[in-house]
Image 1 (cartoon, rainbow, N blue to C red):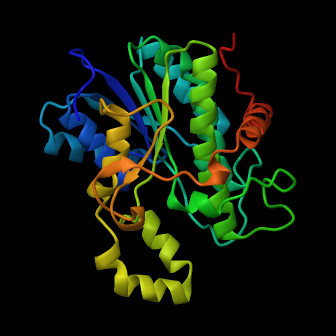
Image 2: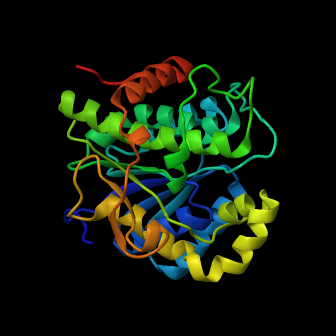
Length: 302
């Protein structure tokens, strides 16, 4: 993987205070990117910045508060970035939550997994489109999951009001991220934005998010704890597909990158399998319109 030009590019990584996001930020800094750690908790965000600077002395990294649970926080973050930065080379929509045992709502009334994992990122991307398009070769990377394969966008019960299941909601949110990446690339192509939209997944990576998801399923959780050393990889290894999508020269617009090992659970980055549900253009465009209506997102359409 190589940087795309000689300048010092800037990337925003959401949820970069821990796990995959922190590993992604570290990887970008080692490739001479400037990085904004965008996270909800200031204490953890500043601690992450300190750790990153210790690992990469002289690194240009800073923390900015961003709570994807609140559309107002998303708008405030985007306004600050547009005021301080002329161009944004990379947006890594990494932050997420998994398998909340009971139905919770964001401050704007969305089912929380869909709201944090997807809708907040949808609005954020729309608001950061101007600085992205001011960069010479901008990229946006959405974090999806192997779980997208079992997902379904339930337009009749998008926020789980009538039937909530922790894993059903998680799968829907990760499918939404993959559909978003595909739709964003089509809109970029149709409107000559010059933006490259991609998605990535980490396989099975040992992070706090993964541990929480395992613990939420008692019987499966016990089995996973026994098998974990043999079927999972570290957060640093799990971040490799995201880094590949963000900066590698061999990616194509609309690519989905994941581990190329057995069943895409771990291994070196490669092109990942997109299930049929992740290729449905009609669903993707309907979701785009519903998301615009829900968040107030506006795009620079021709």
